[in-house]
Structures are given as C-alpha cells and as structure tokens.
Image (cartoon, rainbow, N blue to C red; front, side, top):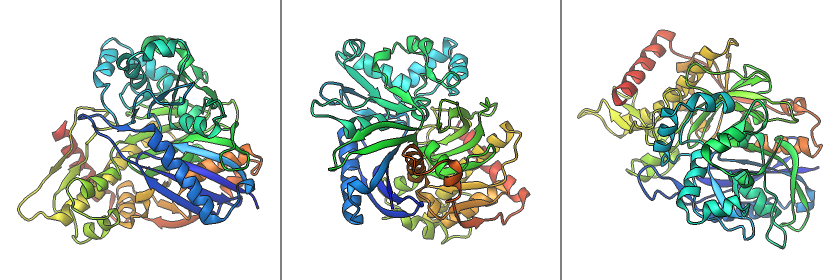
Amino acid sequence: MAYLLALDQGTSSSRSILFSDNGELVSSAQQEFPQYFPRPGWVEHDAMEIWQSQLATIHQVLAQSGIRPQHIAAIGITNQRETTLIWHKKTGVPICPAIVWQDRRTFDECEQLRQAGYAKLIQEKTGLILDPYFSATKIAWILQHIPDARTLAERGELAFGTVDSWLTWQLSKSSDGQGQHVTDVTNASRTMLWNIHRNEWDEELLAMFNIPKALLPRVYPSSHHFANTDLFGSSIAITGIAGDQQAALFGQACFEPGMAKNTYGTGCFMLLQTGDVCLHSQHGLISTSACQLDQQPQFALEGSVFIGGAVVQWLRDNISLIQQSNEIEALAQSVPDSDGVIFVPAFAGLGTPYWDANVRGAILGLHRGSHAGHIARAALEAIAFQSAELLLAMQNDSSIPIRELRVDGGAAANQFLLQFQADLLGIPVIRPRIVETTALGAAYLAGIGAGIFSSTQDCAAQWQEESRYLPQISREQAQHQMHNWKKAVERLR
C-alpha cells in the first residue's frame, strides 16, 4: 500500500495528515502557532514559526503511524491563501513578518487605486475585487516600507510566495540553502497579479503595483512534480499544491459545474465549480482559478466570510465566554432561540457580498434578559447567515440550480450549525465521512501527480456521505430570519 502525506497549513495551525491510497485517514497531527496583532487592523505571522510548526507535525504523524518515509508516494500541500511572505534567496531568511490575508493595512492604497479607476481592469484580468485581502498590495507595502527591500527585489535577490511556496522552498532546500521557488495556479490566482484567462503573470498589473517579476515564483498546474524533499531520510516528491479552498473543492469531489462546497474554518469560504467557464459575478462574488491538472484553465465562483469559526475563538480567548471551542454548541442549544440577539462578527470588515472594510463587529438586540446562551447561539447563527448570503449570490449569478451544499472544516462538526444552515438555504447540507477535505484534496492532487490515481473519477469514487441535514422550517421563516440579519448588517454599515 502506498501513502500520501498532506500538509495543511492554516491560519491558526499547521496539520499533517497521512492518507492511504484508498482515501482512508491513517494518522494526523496538529500544532497551533501564534498570531500577532501589532496594530489595529494588522495581522501577522512569523514565517519560521509556520515552518517549524509544520515540520513538527510531519515528524509527529510519521512517528504515530509507524509509516516509513520510503512508503510515502508523494506529498501534497494546501495552505492559507493570500498571506504574503518575502525572503532572501541566499539565506532563506524572511525580511519581515508574514502579512496575513486578514490584514487590512493596505486599505488606503486600495482606495487610491479604486479612485484612479483601476478596479474594473483588475477584476477583468484576475476575477478579484480590489481589496486588501489579496497579496498584491501587501507585496507593494513590504517593498515600500522594509529597508532595502525594493533594491534587493529588483536585483532578483528576494523571493515572494504564499505559504505553499514558503513550505516548498523549505522542504526542497539543498545544502547551499537554495530551494525550489514555485507555486500552483490556484495560489497565483489569489495574488491579484495573475491573469486567470491567460494563465500567466500579468505585466500590466505588475507595472501598476510596481512589483518586479523577478520576485515571483514559477507557476504550474495544481497536480505537477514541483520538487523533492530529502528531509526525512528518503526522497519524496511534492506532486500536489493548491490553496486551501480550491483543495477543499477538489477533496469534496465537486468536479462538475453546479457543485458547491462550504468550508467552515477561521473564515468561511464557499466555492461553486464552473468548469472551463469563467462567470463574472454581479453579486459581489469573485472568479478564481480552480485546481488544474493540465494547462487548461478551470474556474470557480467564490464567496468569502472573513470571520467564521474565528468568532468562536473570540468568544473563548477575548471574553472567556467559553473555555474550549467545542463547548459552544451546548451553550447555544441551552436556549430555544437567540431571543432577538444578532451577532455581526465584522472584526475584519465584511467580505462577500459587501466588501466593506470599514464595518466593525457588533452584538445587537441585547436586553436585560440576554445571557451567554443567546450570545453563543447568535454567534453560530452568524456563521450560517453569512454563508447563506454567499450561496444566494451564487444562485443569482449561475443559471445552474445548486441542489446541495457539501460542507467541511472544523465547525462542520457542529450539528446545530449545519441544521440551521440547511434551514436558511432550503437545500440539503451534506457532511462527508472524511471532513478533512482540504487535506484530502491536496492528497488527491498529489496522488494524481504521482500516478496513484488515474483521473478525478478515481477520487470521486472514494467520496462518501456521512450526514445529511434537511430543511426543517418554511421558506417564509427562513426569509424572515435572513431579513433580520440583513437589517442588522445595514445598521452597522
């Protein structure tokens, strides 16, 4: 039996998951790492802490499973997207902290570009909405504010990458300190520098953001022989790379147009597979590259909720409403409803469909009888409300009916959340037997790249349903609840 090792590097933790070639989860390990908030609106990571946490989980999963490295057919990498790292090519040392996708420091720069009339051009080329969320303005900020960064970048001495590029560099680093500087199309498509129609770095966008091309990695399809690593005593090929949400779409076997998935992680990210057709949204969604197995572009519509499961972390860490994240469901179900309390967790502004960076979070509808259970319930409901807005926007943009929603991510274990989600949407919400679909997607891509799987059909045959949540309220009741949510959002805006 061959094994596939998936590295799932997320916003708050790094994981390594070992899968067998029949898609069974063999062993997993996870390690959290620190988040840094040096100023309001700023979110940073230490790139070396990301690498050390990821490396530690690889060693843990190998030790737990007893699987020897020579039995691992390939490695697949999936990662938090848009987070921006720049390091010295000679030493591999980062020149500054990584700027996380949640970071809003380049809001003013985005507004200047919008006022100058560039938003339409950017969206036409990249499928993205001009926003600090994406990598381009983060790169420009680093080149402007870090001493000597621009000079070194123009001399070709620096490397930019999203987290997948950083991990691949570290894994493939030779004795002279040089690693492979590569990425895949899905991660490239999140930089706001990649032309998703032509499948290449866009010279006009590079000039607009004043970013030297020498800074950028080589880009390949998501299933490709990117590099080899010799760190574990046996040479292992890295044959799959994809941004976390595209990897989850792949892991959920959403290979046909009209199939959709939602990942409930730190944020919530819903993707609708559109195949070789790039749909341009009229409802605040973005068009993005889906996983590619060859040079043929593939697309998806995507909606982003900036604060999903992170609202539970906030209740735990910031106000100590709960001690452990898994306590939230019981607390939410200790009350029959939220008693009019609505929680809008706009801690990093609002994503789809609003794209409003100025909104701050708020809890509305509080009264003397409100207590912890109402706030907990409103927090979980907020995750579902925000996700419902994504699917409604997708349905409005697509002529293909969305008949079910496949779900994954940490919060997909929360039965209350999934039932409430089905109630709002009016369609089945389906949780697969293996909910680690982001890692599974990376493993599938690596398996195809290594010849373990011959096609996506092999992967689809392994996908299995575990739970199905059906709507239990009327459409009128659902619309009434959505109306109250939208009223609360508009009050804040």
